[in-house]
Length: 328
Image 1 (tube, rainbow, N blue to C red):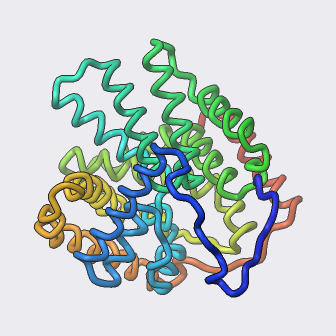
Image 2 (cartoon, one colour):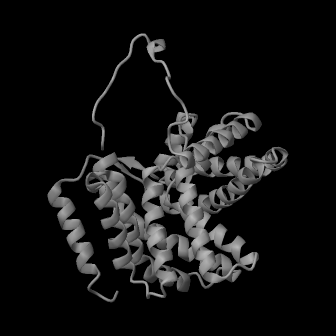
Image 3 (tube, rainbow, N blue to C red):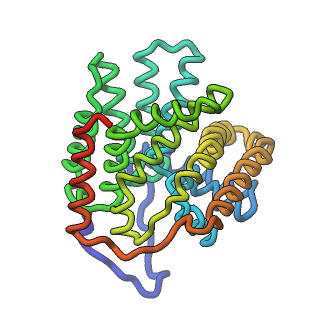
């Protein structure tokens, strides 16, 4: 992890800054903007809303209340609250929509989306989940710009190899394994399962609601089936309630991330924009927390387990792999 030494200084005021402004100018500007955004949120929101917004928009979890974090972990929705690939996807779609609205040509939109996602990665402090999602987004956008037919397994492999080339130790990091395992699960199962769910929801109207419910349930089921043993291995937690919780919470957090990012961009130069939109962001936060708290109280929604044995894991994933060879 490129840590070559540790220095302890006592007393702490024995540390003296000799020079400033010696670092990377781009990173300096990015982190000054990040600090300004954090200060805006702290000035205009009270706890616990302040901590939730810092976590969801900037990836700063130090102000997040322990009870709230535990509720999101128990219901399998913590990936929605903290900065992750979920946020990168929303930012990329938001940039694509804005650039299309402005009439920007297609390839320039791809370049703009790639630059925006890269900037967002820097703003989050290059958090590992965001860095992984940014690399994958860059590979996909590059393939589109080069008029390549996207092979999703190859795209995923290219992103993984690029990350491991930079830092091989990532292979043994739970976050790396869960990130790529989630995408593999989506590729393997989500489309087929979403189609099956949509056919069984023919009674659900309007059509857009049926499509959303089918896509959300199919994707969440795919990830749950693909990653539950790994989550049990690392975190000793199994949470079937995540199927329901993600269905209900994802739209609220998506709206919050999209709105919050736009508000912070404008608020960096026009602070009243943060104050004027505060009620809407607070309402979305309150709704998300209430839904998560309700899901957490469902009996049997989650439980703690002993880590599965290596043989059990091998058997489970062997059967899961064999299931891909069958049509149904």
